[in-house]
Image (cartoon, rainbow, N blue to C red; front, side, top):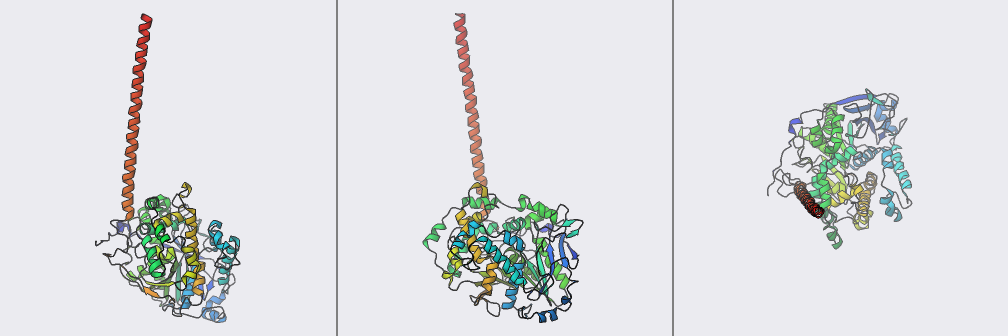
Length: 560
């Protein structure tokens, strides 16, 4: 059946333009970093403090760093540390590695270390001596030390008075305007780097509750409708692995409970929409619930485009995971406005279908074109990454790695333990706490832990950087040894059903069924209550009759 895409019902309020307030931070008070010649220029942050604040672009000043006055000469002095120069317009191995490093640094190191996978998740990995940092790492604290060392190793490439990104998202004693302090709870966060005539906007991946709410809105219909089939295709067609009886058995697992929770949960409707609307005065509550972070993403892209207009400089968008999809959408947004900017993404969750339909029933088709291929976007992803591969479809070049000798890899060893389970079942178990079900003892902890182990070996940005730097993964032109291909994109009709049907998603069907079940259960309970009431009234009436008869008999006895 030919499918007709329902256009966004929220078009009437998309005219609001989110303003960007630029704040110049005092020189010497904020960190600066130079990774392979890139200088951290500004930080995009959104506040959700009690006092409403606009999206802020905190521009870092380097008054006490004279070497920045001549970046070319500075790069020549540190040529031993810097990677070879590369073009902002042409892809290369050097460009990919540099983008991967910038994406790693986009995460808050303290949060990354603090929130690293739990002991329950990593116990088997350490027992098997399978840590990505080597068999000498056999506990979580040692792993955390290694994580911090990787950050510091990258920052060793920096030649500046204070090569640190500490508190870059939460600068101590730094106030923007009117006492409003930066927060990371709600809104898009990203770093703007510059190198010569190349500017790079790095969108951070999922960290906060607001980030989770945004991706739930993106993915819930896809997870319920398409994720299961997509995972089987990845395993058999892309990884070239056999689908065994155990996996087929797992695929029969009931998803009634998981689908019910997923389909009825919308975090923006559950309170985060109010937070986002409060933090963004230009974003209405209706708009926040419909499209989440999208207006903020557009504002950042527009700000950078205006800054670079007429300069001849190149602009690159990049990001990891959710940040990668945001980078791809920013590139698509600029493309629709007639401006071509490349995007280099890592394990992105895929913009093709979510741009057509989100869980809120909104779409982005007025701002981006998800019905055509976008060769200006290049995605790098491990073939068995369940987030980067199975949460959506790409629109640009897909460069996969990890296929060669896959059955001997740690990714295969751990990912095969959960492959085959339905997508909604995996999504629910991995996110049961966030879906308000973690305290209901409904989560299968073994499945949740195994699924997280798989992502540790495929999706974690530290692992990705190691894999991409490994000999044989990348060619000099930036393609992978396993090959890069331009993604297939469904047109408006989507006759092959690549994306969820906007008129007939499984969530809508499930919700209708749950309403019917609830109504039936409610009706049954009401009927039962009525029956109980009638029974009680009848018993009471019968008791009164009996008591009346007994009283009458007693009277007769007394009168006799």
